[in-house]
Image (cartoon, rainbow, N blue to C red; front, side):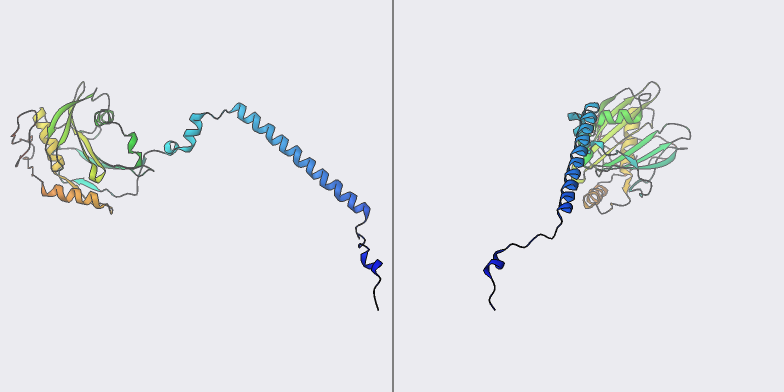
Length: 267
C-alpha cells in the first residue's frame, strides 16, 4: 500500500503544551535578570574596594617578588657543619646558631662568651643563596653584628694570610672595647667567612688570635656540597699550625712587618 504524500510532508506537531512553553520562557528571563543583578552588585563592590584600597605599583611589586617571603629563621633541627678545634679564651662558653633563608642561604654562627657577657669571639660561615644580592658589605655587616655600643664603625686594618688565603681585617673600636674583625669571601664555594675577636691587649695579638682561629676552623659535614668540601680539603693542605701556650697570648713570627704580617710556623 502506498503512502499519501500529503501525510509525509506534514510537519510533526509539538507535544509541549503552550502554557508550559510560556512558563519556561519566563523562568529563563527571570534567571537572566538575577544573574545581571548579581553581576552589577559585584562590579559595584569591586569599585568601592579598589577606591578604598588603591593597588599601587609598590604593592604589586611586593606581592609578586620574593621580598614578601619570610627572612632568616632558626634551623633548630639542622646539625652544625663547622667547628673550631680549640679556642684560647678561658671561662668562655661556646654556642652555635644555625639560620636558614627560604631562598637557599645558610649561616652557621659560632660564638664564645663569658656567662652574662657579650660574645668575645664570633665566626660566621655564610653559604650564599639567591638572597645574597641584598647582603651588606663586610664592614657594615661586622659593625652591625658586633653592636653599636662595642664598635662605632669598622675601619680597614690590613691583611693576614690564612689557610683560606688572604683575609681582610677591620678595626672595631668602641668606647670600652677594641676588637678585630675579619672577612674572607670564597667564590668557588659561594662562602663568606667573617667574624671578630676581642682577644689580646694589642693589635698584633688580636691579629694572631684571628689567624689562629681560622687555622683551627674545620668542616664537620659538607651536606653534599662538593665545592665546599673541596675548599676545606685544599685549605687543610695549607694549614700552618698555631699552638699558643695555655694562658698566654699568642705570639706571631712576623715576616712582612707590623701592618701586614704573614703568619708562619708555631705560636
